[in-house]
Length: 146
Image (cartoon, rainbow, N blue to C red; front, side, top):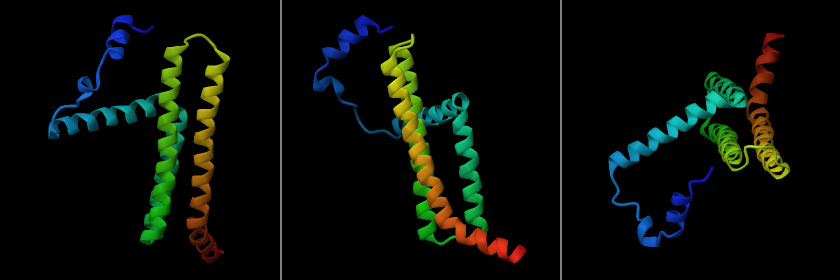
């Protein structure tokens, strides 16, 4: 439920009220603390985040074992980052949607489905990049084993 008093105060804010104040190191550290809390919350509440974590670790280990060059690392980091970003945005949207409409609503379901689709698209793209980058190394390893 939305607090009407807080809602009205947000509407009456002018651009002067939105001044973030001076830049401080403690303020930035506090921001990092909130972000880390968000990552922990995502890992606690989203089973797919654990799959992303396992896949990320596996890709990073394989990249280290195969001693990838900087170009290959860049592709893998972008791929991993895209999946984690999509998962974080999906999680945030789910939390907001659940607050906005605790009961089932077909439009909330659509929004959640589309957000989940974004995670799927980024995961498929990341897997494709992973196979393009790591595939030749894995094939050579397999050929040596045979």
